[in-house]
Every structure is written in structure tokens, then in C-alpha cells.
Image 1 (tube, helix red, strand yellow):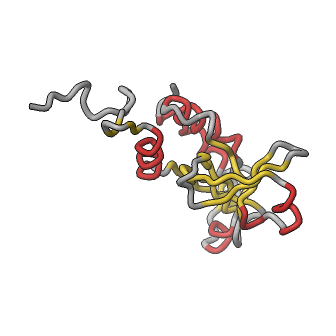
Image 2 (image 1 turned 30 degrees about the horizontal axis):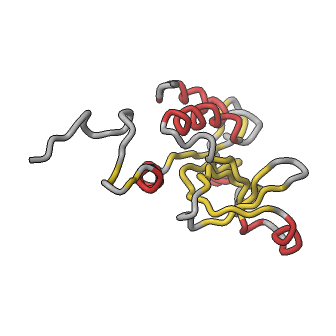
Length: 165
């Protein structure tokens, strides 16, 4: 599994001419989600980019407890958040409930232009990304429960075993 310092290279992207994309962090994120046992059901989803870019990117874990609705485009095998899917496609694409467990926001040069921040005379292309730690714990709890209670994987369990008297 990659370590947090492995993501350090992402910050190099901010000073280049291109925007931050899922490809810049997805290996790192996907490794984490796989390690936690939710890799297969966690999808990269295009969402509204707001004032900064055409799209932002969300990492959504498919689950019936999800508050988001995502759609799979069968023509390109890409997932889209409901907020950007037209009504026509909502009727013909398969939908899923999902929980957002991470995101990437390409910010372009909106803030660097405003503050006239440059590197080597060029505007800095910025972006931000994050993993939703509390959301991950929630989805893991939901997926790892049985009639006796929570069954934590040893990778995330607070203790190896617990004795009750």
C-alpha cells in the first residue's frame, strides 16, 4: 500500500499547465479503498465542477445507505453524479445509491490569478483533494455488521480482540 508521502508528487501538478485529474491521485486513493475492502464498489464519478472546471471528481462507494445517486453510462463505462445527468439519460442509464468517500476539485488558476501568484512567470494551476475519513468509517460499519454487532477488519480495528465479562 502507498504511504501518505507518495501523494506528495501531486503538488507538482499544481504548477503545471494542466488541471488536477483523478489520474493524478486515483492510484493512491484506490489502493486505500482496496486495502479497506471497499475498492470494488468504489467508483470515480464525474460531478459538477462549479465555478472552477467542467467537472469535479468524487469517489463514491455504492451502497443502499447512500445519500447520492450516481449513473453508469454504458457507452463509456463512466459514472456521473445525478446533478449533471440529463433527464433523458436518467431514464436509460443504470442508477445506484452511493456514499461519497473522497473527492478531487480542479480549481484551475482562479485563485492564483486573483492573488497574482506565479511560478516561473506562469499562473499556478491549483486543485484540492481529500478522503472522507468519517464517511469511510460509516460505510465500513454499515458493510461490516452482523447479528452480534460490528465486525471490524483487523486493518482498522481499534484492538485485536476484546474480552467481555
